[in-house]
Image 1 (spheres, one colour):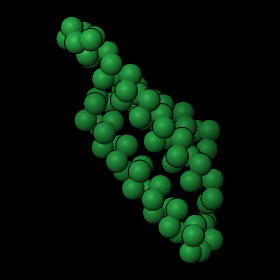
Image 2 (cartoon, helix red, strand yellow):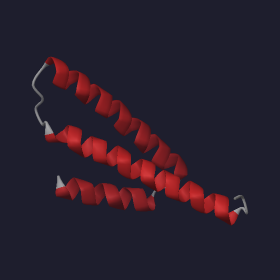
Image 3 (cartoon, one colour):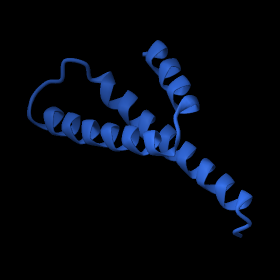
Length: 77
């Protein structure tokens, strides 16, 4: 899991806004799917839910930070 998180951090750093949005949407769909699976059957890797939830949070944080930077650079307050 630690290696996956490091890889995700690198991807987030290198991605543009569009890619971050796509990644966030993909992880949100996966999170929903994992929650449904967990409710009906035993998960093969229950820690994946934790990882996906953290990934969504990291992506949303980065999106918020970048949008804030772009608003400041455009002179919007």
